Length: 408
Image (tube, rainbow, N blue to C red; front, side):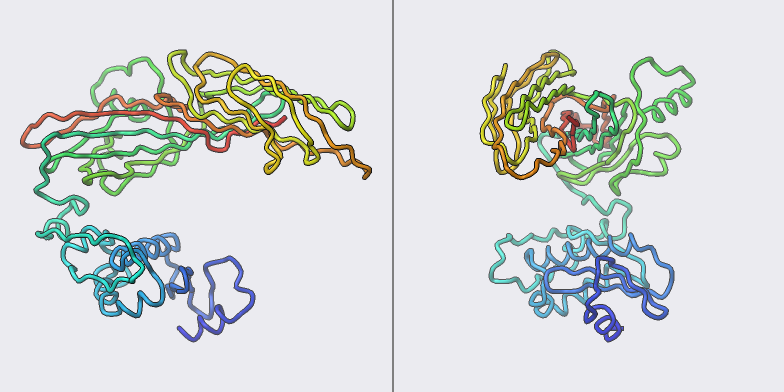
């Protein structure tokens, strides 16, 4: 197999970009990390996505043992340790436990570290039985905090492509729920969101109609391994025993009912061969009590731009020749307000035949705290623990610009 991979894949010029190759009756899945090829060979129709996920997780595990490096020297220096780890992370072709935190509890051997590695050593924690054999492999027993707190962040990115006439061509929101838990013992958490399916299921179970209010439809939801999927499928509630510290609870996407935080109305007039007028009006559509931070609007101009003079109602604007754009920056943009920028652009007249300027879209960057473009809201976050302690829950929302583009 090694010779087949070297002769047919490594030594051929047509390596290409496809990470899966079939030679004879076998499939080779391969990745190159620094100066090392990692290859998985299968003779059946295996799950490719699962195989690559296993490789990525295994490399992260090796890096945590080797002090952050994974290359030929690290492999040579840690041959015995790699064999010991492979014994634990794969059985009969089935991936097993790949969590560095848990494996370090019972494979306490330290890797031979590179002299250039500056990563501090992780101290192993005793008593690994529950993590290895129990159902809660991501959390150890005996955790204790003076103050029990949960921090929950909903972070959304808005992607938009709008035509020059103001109609939406493409619009979606990708979001993630980030959590940071400092909870004692083995708590059970239950998270309620204003998603349509969850609210409908709740009203069926309680035999009462759903309350009026905005509900949203979540698409492409993926959860952290701690979420009880059986309970989610039957009750549509997100219940879980959280890992200690920071983790990503879930990811989602929304394609309908998106609240756009900004509307941009551009008008660009080309006055002959040497002058251009640019007017851009930006309206904030979110609540008057909210505000956006770090607003940047990039208006593209032709390459032969010489200089530009500006008039703005707020913020600052300048011409940036390295990206061929007028860059308008507003530090703080209140809700339900509008700002305008007018610019006169002078172009260098060229003798060569003028090509028609293909107008790239206007791009926008921003952050809006305590606002969600999807309308997603946390209805409740309940914490149960056998000792019955009190917890403090903190919830924060933030919406950022993903690919936010307006054609002009």
